[in-house]
Image 1 (cartoon, rainbow, N blue to C red):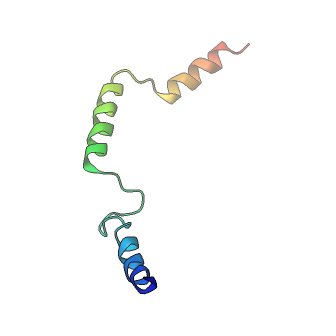
Image 2: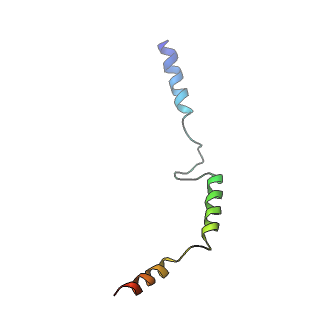
Image 3: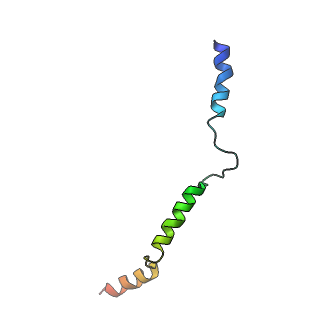
Length: 61
């Protein structure tokens, strides 16, 4: 029984790894597609940080 556990443990752990070609921090294609769609929706509605900074400077006495 002990031999069987020692034999099967490395096999079970080998199944826990991710794909070898995935880089650390990489996202899946469906995640990339969702991020691109969100960026397209936000693009026309976004405000530049420079415009916000200029507006804040004008509000100060």
